[in-house]
Image (cartoon, rainbow, N blue to C red):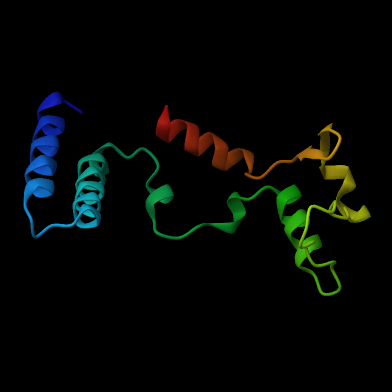
Length: 120
């Protein structure tokens, strides 16, 4: 994207925000809408902008974790700083980074590739 659309967008934003009948929220929404219109022709992965999230983009490990904590009979989250009980069914997908800190896959490899191509 060239400099001219960016300068035009900035000038419009300044004009909108200085006008009394526009609120900051309206100006932000207008700027976001303008940014979306300016970026639209540069999209590499249109599926990322389809307006819905494809569940297949989630890694199987993450789906297992969500299912384990949302299944009937799952322990409710503690209301204080008490440690969360980790179900045995998901221990194999959690990596212990340090005491009480875990990491796990959230997105499927195909989604990560698609996302990286879009922002790359």
